[in-house]
Length: 228
Image 1 (cartoon, rainbow, N blue to C red):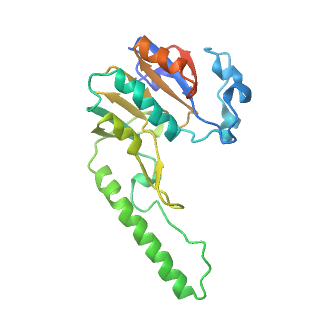
Image 2 (cartoon, rainbow, N blue to C red):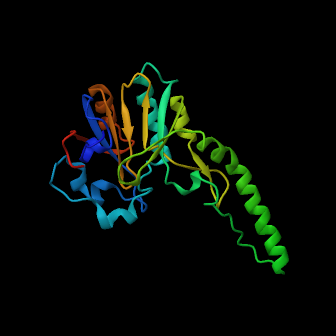
Image 3 (cartoon, rainbow, N blue to C red):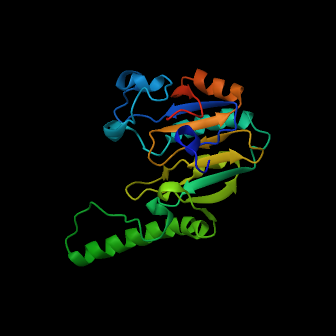
């Protein structure tokens, strides 16, 4: 993908077919009504979504529900579902220590009690994050264009559903889709640029046709030479 433009800056050009899956919109409105022009393939027929980005659920992050659903057709399209490779943007703040803080909304009667409680919350958060931070520093980093250096690691395909971090505001995992994921047999490649409100899937014609036919997401067929 080095030196590629448009679609080929996110996924390799060497596959038979390509689909663009659109990320969910915050207000639950569908792309078909919000911006239907994006659901029609075109090389220069529309500009980047730009000012509409504030409405997209997880710019640079495919919705967790859609990641989980995507695992199923991807597993069927590879002979190595237990041996996959992942790339996660090195710039996500939670990947490194010192970037997360957990705050309480409770009103304390004294500053000393508030400080003690705040420290306990922060200590608990850092204890939760310690395995993530310890793991991240062991991973190689692939320098990439535009400040998109990527942490590389391996795992089974179902591991895509366990990438994320403890939430600073609530209990549970705040999911993050990887920027790159592909199986050892290279049967397909999934790419999500950190600034894009969509994810590309490159693979066989059968895989892409299955994605395009699914009502799980709003998608459109694209070609490597397309701008988006």
